Image (cartoon, rainbow, N blue to C red; front, side):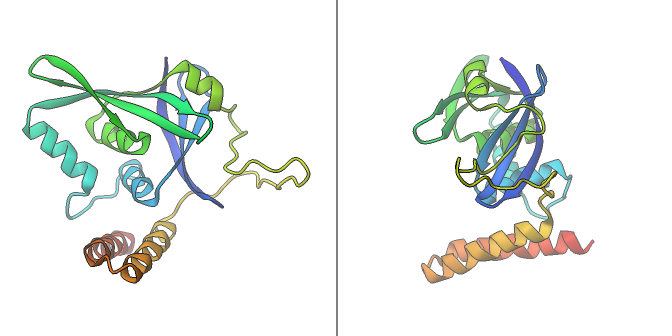
Amino acid sequence: MHRVTVKDVQFSKVGFVMLLESQLDQRVLPVFIAPGEAQAILVRLKGIESKRPLTHDLMRQFLADLGVEVRRVVIHALDESTDIFYATILYAKDGTIRDIDARPSDAVALALRCNAPIWVDPSVMDKAGVEPGRVRAVEPAAEEPIPQPPETPPVTEEDMIASLEDRLRQAIRDERYEDAARLRDQIDELRHTADK
């Protein structure tokens, strides 16, 4: 098994990508994730304080209040036909070890808050892991290589705000007003922390 650390979350042409670095051989596992989970992970990585608990903070507190201890997260499978990764959260409750299926992004966001180790199955790392310096969010077509900059700039608070604003506009168009209000609050909170 490869124990990994969250090296970074970056913004690419096709969305956010979480980069998990193996402590065993420094290979990097790139996993595309949604903007909300990218924000949840980046907030923790950058040490940004939230005035109100975000979803994964709430989940951590809820589990702690119930006496549940998150022991580890394992990204154990990759469906190559859909490029979907599968993860499991292993937790202890009343001396019994249990597990639950989770998206890798949610599992990692929770693991970061619970100081739980993150592991990747060797078969997943062999299928999708890349050597350091070869992380590419978009694979070029054989006939049209896409030039890669030497280093992708890190995701900024402005990137996260722009992404959330896009989601807010879509929620309003779809008349999902509760989601719109939640997104508005997230934007206001990010703007407030960016102004400090």
